[in-house]
Length: 116
Image (cartoon, rainbow, N blue to C red; front, side, top):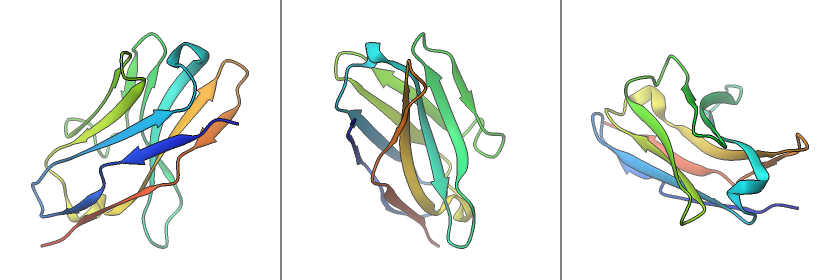
């Protein structure tokens, strides 16, 4: 079992910024992928961003240019920097990791609310 501790959600106005953090209970060296997903009310969970164990990142079209996934190996923590937030970014954000066996684990979710 892998535990993931998320933090960084909150309330922000349109155009504002937030940074989410996720710390897994196992070393990055045992992971293949680190990802962020989000789920808005009444909608399915959707992919937001990913980064591989060699640092290759990917972002969904809806957040490209505004959000950036990164990681800090020394802290065993990965991040989602969210800039230029929009009302439609309001959702519960989940971090996700996948190990070398293809097993996936999820964080508890953190609420991001963008309001005007």
